[in-house]
Length: 363
Image: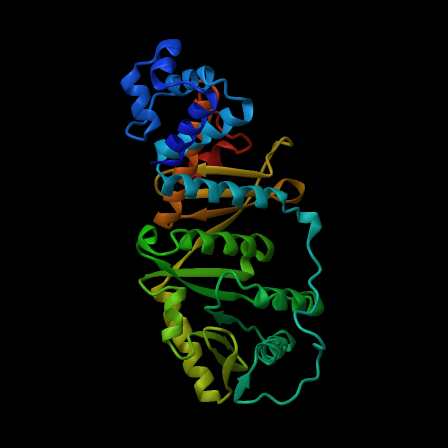
């Protein structure tokens, strides 16, 4: 029995009426009503409204039944995708350009003076200290440098440390961040695994801009498989290579120049075999009445535009198929909500405004 039909049964019992009595009062077909309550049939919108009326559901009960009805029609996977996207967009709208956080040092006693780097590191705090030491050396370099890592998207220690040194030294360093996306996320134990990568990396992109470049490839190996590897995570800089255990409790530090050169060449080779997760475009809006977040969607790509200062906007284009599918689910969810809220009446879709003709054609 689905959540929708289970809630129908609860409302029926609360009303004290039998299926026969409900059918007689509402004019609904008794067989169809019974199949709806026991979960054998997805009803029409007008049947849901008639059911709410006959059981005398209050506004809160009506709203929850309609939400469950949308879930029933869309399927749980599509519904969950839509809910995830909705939460993401709410958080993006709350991000204000004028409210850039001042990141504190990610670990205590961080400074320019450090103890000599050890080849083997034990303990999370010591590992974080070494990461900060490696990063600070990069930010103090005068020549151009870049970073490579495959740290999990959720962990923000690396991001916090980089933001701290960006503020301290007044410069940015490109970070090439590599991810494995699951080829079949709905069959993985965490069906939202790809969406979670998008969730955290979008936050980074909108705060760091062009200095943060996530790449992806498809793989069957995911986070729970990392423990099968001895040192699955890495941070590669011009000053050293740090290999890290899956629980971020141990690390191996390599600083031989030939080894560093080997890893840097390897990272550059990996970049050529992976795809950028996003295309980032800066656009100018001419109108004053613009939205905090605007979305354009086709079957092939999604474009999320975040409002910045003085009419300048950053547009993030997503082309990865499973993420585009999740946005398709989100727009289907919006249409279902409009349909349900208006009792099944046809609602003309409204187009988001604020783009020039050239921008629409470009998209």
